[in-house]
Length: 413
Image 1 (cartoon, rainbow, N blue to C red):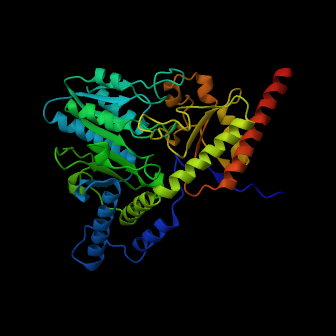
Image 2 (cartoon, one colour):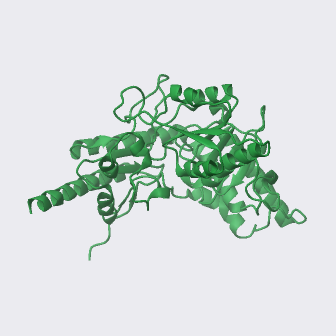
Image 3 (tube, rainbow, N blue to C red):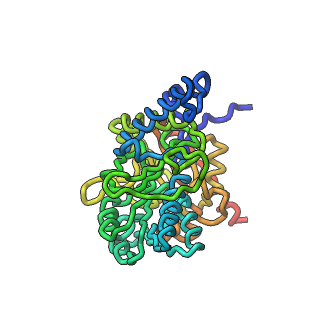
């Protein structure tokens, strides 16, 4: 029996490989240095507290914040829930329910909490995005005029993805922030996909709240952070979890010291590697697209073109993202064939992979159900190699040819 093919991992939007340097930083806190950071009456506890303090400083510096603005969480889903539900609960203490604006193509970590808020009486507006064939903007971005028209006197929050997890489109967050603050509302930015793929600076974004997940940028799973602005106009949230009062009362529970140390190291490495990693990864992504375009008839990109830029000549698609639709091929069948051939990819968000419905992001672009189901997402990382890209392109082309051949043979029979 022949050996199974070597795995080529191109599902880095779902999760990333733990960087060995991150693991090395975490190991002491998993073994000998096991103290509780809240137990400061002895050396083990005090050294754990010092490690958390250092990690908080490191992570804050990586995202342009101050240490007291960082709340450690289990990941971006918890962070987004705390930002959305916590700000709404704060408003409720003042006897108001209010109105939230978001984007129809947001991650479910934002959409689902907002559905919950709707059931409690909070109004929610979901902005459409520029469609794939609209021709009047960048596919996947919102129209700023739509945002301006959506504001109401009781709008207290706008929630946007900095970079979409399926089609990689980067929103013009600075322009969104300007309009949001002019109306007296807060801005929550989901930065989960952006870290390590572009510079993330919460001040430059003018974010009031920002969510992060370590496992999206080669850190550990179960580790994340919420940025809560405290400089200037301080943001006030109600906690979702009550208990020991950790994280200034916003997120009670024993701190996961190894995960926090790993999160901070991953953030530092992400920033340190931007200048080299992003151009290299973009080159590999463009190489993958060029080879697929040449070998897979009818293939097309979902979202902005891979080389699309905005008026300031900044790329508007994440360097590691490629989302394509392949006419005449069922995406799930292709992914199964690719998995058998040793290539890991996906059709969209890992959080909705078990849903039988087509991607809400692709439908938001105006794709039909069949077009959305014929789509596949590839996500590269700092560990992706040229050889892997070339083999991956060959395996995709072979898989498409085989599936199309089966369809033709089935139709003829």
